[in-house]
Image (cartoon, rainbow, N blue to C red; front, side, top):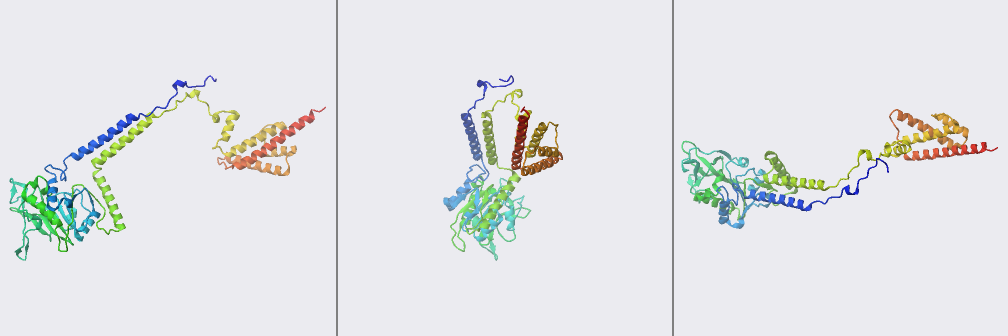
Length: 469
């Protein structure tokens, strides 16, 4: 045994360690349970204008009132408004949106016969309202009537519609609401639509908080106070009458026929998808999809990811990290011997073995192999004629010619080989080695081996002749 060889004892050799599946299963279950707990607790929090929220700022009473008025199966609350599901016979209620509706889809829905009620004071509906020349303005600061002597709780009254000097009654949506209690409202202005609710003011212009009008075959109803339909405000009979009136108005029969549609209700943060109309073209559907994605990306850039999305992504990142750590910790590594005990690679060794390993390496230029063959030929000739190295190409040719060991064809091949090797030496010396094919190396090796064999044979014959008496 070599004095510096190194052999690791069998009892110290590493053995694969089993992955602790029970530990990782426990961790994964714990993470998933944490995610569900956080999500469930998030959903349990009170959400303003929440459809199932029974707190003072929820809208559960409003949804219940709508269902009582028009039927349970006709009221659909959703957080994803799919325009393709709506028909011209349906109605849409939008409460305090945090993003504007798609204007093109909203206009198409209204013009085809749909009815829309926008109940919003300071949300994101201003862009949609301005499309129909409705502008939001501040509400009166000195209302003539107010609750608890608080100007923020101004009382609004229906406005009778006057045509040609005759009073024809109030709008159907407020027919059952003698008064409506507002809560920090804004006001609306419009050049053409019908004014429906008004806050009378003292020493300043009155404030219109509800307008209605026809858009194409459809109807638009706008209320500039989202709080009139929350649970706290629906305690007042007038507000409850307004909720009933809005529901009945949105599905009431029209002059062009029966409606018998449904009412879709969205509030605050909701998604939109698809395009309105049952006959949507493929191009329109693709454009609608692209529009939805652009809007989601823009919202993510402006406000960041939602809390739920952030929690899920964070949990997934943590889970992936745990799996990676577990795999890395359970992986067995081969113990390396010390540097002094490691075997020296053959290519780093000297002598014939090292030289052979270098020449046989795949990355070695084959030109070096040809030079090695020439060197072997030179040594054999120098040894045969008892002369010193190195030998030039002419010296090699002269010696081979005197020995007369090659026929004419082999002699021509030798001259070509020596010429090629001279060209390769020059190219290598200038730093531009030429590419040599494997086939050329094999042919040169066969030719050199033939010459060396004949030189050896010549030497044996001469030695045999000289040994005779």
